[in-house]
Image (cartoon, rainbow, N blue to C red; front, top):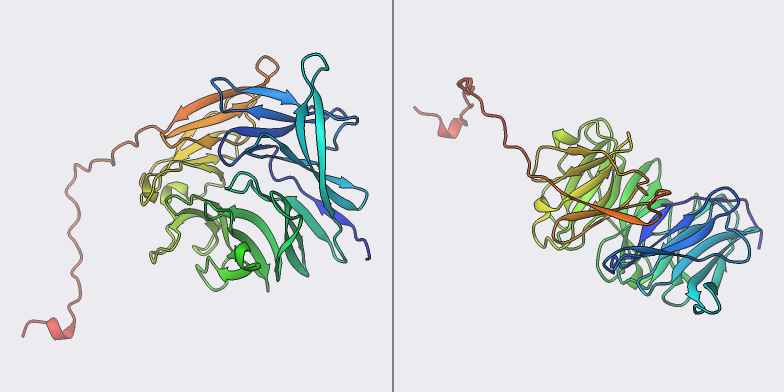
Length: 354
């Protein structure tokens, strides 16, 4: 097999398990980087370092699983190696880190980008994306047999889960000059079906989805410029591009779960360009802009009760969580002037009075 030059990317420095029980990040800086696991299920969060004999490279990726183990993705020479890390040892022996190697990926010819996909909704599975101009491969790297589970024509990026079982995966596929989000059924060998077709030549990307309500957060240039929009999975209604999101280049990172059949009421959190946080509901015509807490790690998790939990780390508080509640949207402005008269509507000839 011919080994190629491989490009690696980092999806997020802080990842939260599907059920919100654990999180993981690559802590430290310079040459002293090490994985760190956060426990979020208790009354107060706490962190456990998972160092090994040598520090990790800055381009390594970590992913928290619901069982408390941390998946790590490293580049070793020309291979991409995956392993599970977990704390071992007692108080007498001191904290230690156990490591369970899982397997490695050796891409073939062509520039290949390998990255971890977001945590699988089932909490135990983990998948990686190996994308090149020749095609894209989805690999299962934890929670099952290590190996390829899908092969998709075109270069794919992104990665959003559309169901709670971890079977339907949405990817942004670049093919013949345009990028369209497609749905990949991992239970049928990677069967691909169209997901977003807003306009024939538009780039339509899926940024985030909530399986409970079906809410989809989309970025598309179909309106004439790249804009944030929203739609509902399986709905016949068109994608909507709210005016309050016009010109907003923020990235949605969390959606409120548990709002079955009520996508308009889901809280959405945006990471703004200036480093702040935007809070919004599809039913509202207003985006609340708030300052991020010091040391914010760039992501968060909505509770079903509508609280947004934001992780942060500072020298004084190395493992902290702050919570926000989406405020009530202001009422629409009241017009005191009488509205202008409505323009006459043309009457079809069959309905015109004689």
